Length: 302
Image (cartoon, rainbow, N blue to C red; front, side):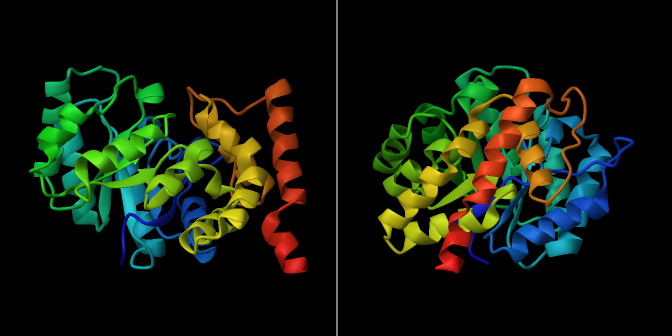
């Protein structure tokens, strides 16, 4: 299966009313995304509420994903742990379960120095033979994977890609100019995704795809065939929702959008709480407007 290209939704983890992980509902969400044409799945990333799950729950979600859609598209799991040792152990377990690749984050909470960041990534990579995508998201995780760190990681053969979620699209060009094809770059922030794809990102790790997968797939396909007018048309329609991916309540917003579109539940695990009040009304209005004006529906009607 080709990896690191096309649309990879950051899939949500579904919860039962009592707060437990709903394995069957999670499998249904994953299967529906694959049926709608996505090219791969990110499991247990930010939208998958990785750090709200217990270790055993994380591994149960991975096994459920392999059971539901393994072999149809690449399955990538977030590696988001508080210590390097636990991250390495999780990477090893993910490989044994049958996951195809890893999206490795800096260790949570602690803000590392560059040497510590390098050692964290190298240690996790040495614990597995799986291909790895590093996740650079300075606004969310308070650390930037600088070029000094990427320089030192060049010899680590299974570190393949970088998910670029810095809000400055110049980072895509700077990375490609510096490393050529040594690192694959994936667009990782929804509201600069088209800019990233235009500048050379090979694919898109997306939050809002969980609610509107068909439009996300159509956007990337338009880019791949060089139809920039169509890509722009879809992107402009999508942008009000894509901005939600840059907000701190992105998980609640995306899950609410999924629920409105009949694709999942808005239930989240504390400390998150479902949206309420004016914010909830705002997101509902945005989703309903997008649902009523879907570009794929307009194309089908034409």
